[in-house]
Length: 456
DNA sequence: GGAACTCGCCAC
DNA sequence: AAACGTGGCGAGTTCC
Image (cartoon, rainbow, N blue to C red; front, side, top):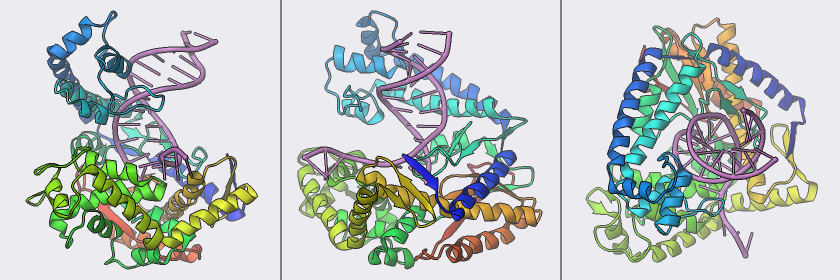
């Protein structure tokens, strides 16, 4: 993979970008070191008791008894060997190299209650490791992560020492443990500025799909909602009841499809992993509940009576998705792939290019990933310039692909929100004329003197 | 005794 | 025909 900015504009974006990021690295994230120390000890105590609980199970005693050396309960290799070679259990799934998997999903499928304490200990250990990482990296109570612009094939950024781009957010318990450690400067508050659907917007700039543009331009339209209605055959969408199904449609169908996944994986993920339904024929009272209804009862009432029925249904939806809903997007993928095969490289809208050996999915995914991040990088640079020019007390401290994080002085909140909104929604589309959809940013503020776990 | 690999899991 | 894109990191394990 060879890639380089091949216009001055692209070169300038990376130059200005690295300077703005350097400034943010220098500012850094303030952390509560006393909290980290306390929490690490507390987590260690909980881990010890969970480990003791696990070691009293007959499951563990049998594992120990049937192993020649010393058992390391933290070793996925040893666990895999015990479960699949010694006990001869059938793995629910295999790893990349063809061995029996011991990830959460695979272990859940085995239905061994004794493993629950072990899994819980693993989760706490991950949290502890993050907090310990913070303590290792902090200088006078401040984290100075590195943000890299030169490491990611798709032109996104990466972060390390510590990685501030993968802090827990989905799991509420892990979110609280980890993000309570991140605090603003005295009297300040943390604020995130997020692009709404950055990568989808970026893709629309390339494929110019009429219906996709319509979805992104009309605030009342919502593709994830529409897909939930279609996938689960809802008579009408009720936010208070069907929010979870919308989430499943978004993360189990729309995004995987955009990245190149296919109906079988999507069906399995949505029905089994997220919907909690079994592989075969469905019975009454199975699966996740929404409102008063079980998923199995609802789908059966709509004529989808088994996993195989559901898979056929998702196959039809996939055909409809690319054939009728976003046909120009599908066409763009083919043209884009042909262009790459003809010339051996592809040129991006904002002056970057990539060449080298790539498959179709890579070739079709990189432009959107790059541009989505470059929307943010452009805003980041302008925000940084603004803070310097106006000698603001607020400071940029980090970035997560489509969002920027500020350590905000409350007196400057209103001013900055107005300015950043203008930069993102007016100045940016003015700078890159190929932007063919309205860009939207959302602001999330956290409590004054409160941590990154306490929304305002 | 360290480099390289594998696995699992967090984010977008 | 096959089948999810981009990262970082820790721990365990294997290779040299």
